[in-house]
Amino acid sequence: MPDVPAEVIRRLYATPPEKFVAARDAAVAQAREAGDPRTAREIGRLRRPTVAAWLVNLLAIRRPELVADLTRLAESLRAAQRDLRGGELRELSAQRRAVVGALVAEVRRLAAAEPAAPPAGKLPLGEVEATLNAALSDTEVAEQVRTGRLLRSSHYAGFGEVPRPQLRLVTGGEEKHRAGKPGTPGGAARSGVPTEAVGSGVPTEPVGSGVPDGAAAERAEARRAREARAARAERAKRRRTATRELEKARAELGRAETDLSGAGRAERDGAATLDRIETELAELERRRAVAEQELSRARLARRGAERAVTAARRRAGEVEAVLEALDAEEGDAEVGDERAD
Image: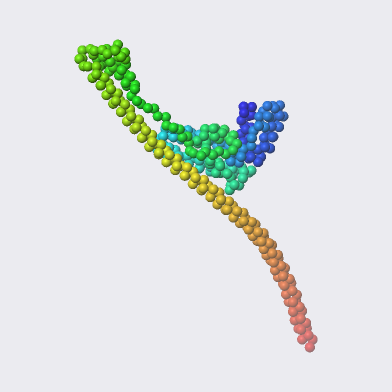
């Protein structure tokens, strides 16, 4: 969409899906207010991505250098499988698992920094991983991922391109052509046959040889047979080599798909474990809040009891002072009575 500024597209596709429509409508209104109805129409045609697609777009927008690494790895994988380079393909497959795992972890981190993102346990990371693997195999998906304009997650049933080997058969015809080409060394001149007689079908006598024409024909036929056998052997050798490389590539493909399936199960199990832990944490937080309320009430009760004890002690001291005063008065009265007697 050449009429939509790139910054507007990046801002919209970095917006969480639940807020996409409102953000798009605001951008349309802004374009209309600026007197640009064509851009407003183009913005209005932008579609809302799914949550998984938004997470991939967020990765491409926030961390484009990581997506560039993914693109380079995809090119290397396609080249290795086209050329049937089994050893390099195994090494790149291991690198693929590491790169995709790191990108999924980065997606989780980016989502955690987005207030409107779903909880960590509800993130569709399996779809994100499937889309990244599809980008390694499908150039169209890779381009959508690179530009950050993905609308929905993608899946790929296989792994990488599976082209038929481009084999060129070497039959030795070029050597035969050179051997029979008039006027070239090793051709008619070397066999002693005049150049004007080659390919004409006119039998001639060899110059200064005395060898019958039949012997020359037998030699030529034997040479052609040797060349044909050599060509067949070379083709068989190349076929065996290609077959071995294909078997290695298919075995690596099977291992890679098994690893992918296992990683998917592990990711789902991890998400379930995380959900369970988050539920337990929520229950613990609730119990903690209740305990804090009970502790607060207990502290208030203790402080009230301390104040009551202080007041009671003060009152007891006052009463004791009164009693002591009364005792003193009674003592003085008794002494006076004794003196009076």
